[in-house]
Amino acid sequence: MMELKSERELAIMRKAGSIVGEMLDELAGKIKPNIKTIELDRICERLIKRRGGRPAFKNYKGYPANICTSINEVIVHGIPGDAILREGDIISVDVGVEVEGYFADAAYTYPVGKIDAESRRLLEVARGALEKALENASADRRVSAISCAIQNFVESNGFNVIRAFVGHGIGSELHELPEVPNFGQPNTGIRLERGMTLAIEPMISAGGYDVEILKDGWTAVTKDKSRVAHFEETIAITDNRPEVLTSCQRKNL
Ligand code: MF3
Ligand code: CO
Image (cartoon, rainbow, N blue to C red; front, side, top):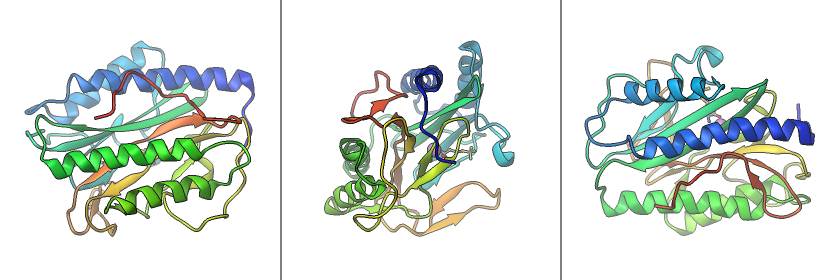
């Protein structure tokens, strides 16, 4: 399914997106040493419901929590629980919200207290990769314009793109076509059109890109245990720079 969204649908996705954006802003003030990831999950559940949304990940293909909390070498789909944040960690929080049958999905990687210089650079490059993707995501370009912009930026900065997970179309389902890989060959993939809505989500490793899934069936980690940063926004394609539906006050790190 790869639908162009009507203005009515985009208006609903903006509502869902604004809740996601607000959640990620709110979390910036909560992420500190000694907090448990399950506490972050409860905060998000409460705020999302209070704003009239539904946490979109809960029970999605059996996923057991409201958000994903992925610490250090965890790439994505870390399940909130008793894990305690420690000074120097990095944690990606991924939030999805459904409003009136439409979805928005975004993620942000936060430093926990003071982090080392390499981790800080990892966050900057991953955030920069998403920015490069946005600069190249306009109508009449192809999906590969996004993929190549991310890969080139990341590899020229000495890091690696995770290949086992990709961005995706989004709308009346959390995952729609097209797939939006964070690497690939130029001049491939479908042509972008005004009204397409995509979740672009580069996952960047400080080391290798090989992936392992833990016994819980969800938690994805790097095989070599290197740290990963993950940034995601839900966007709508226009003739120029895309509209970011999940935007908020988050500042570059
Ligand atoms: N942003 C992630 C994705 O698009 C979050 C999905 S978590 C899941 O895959 F639990 F819903 F799978
Ligand atoms: Co996503």
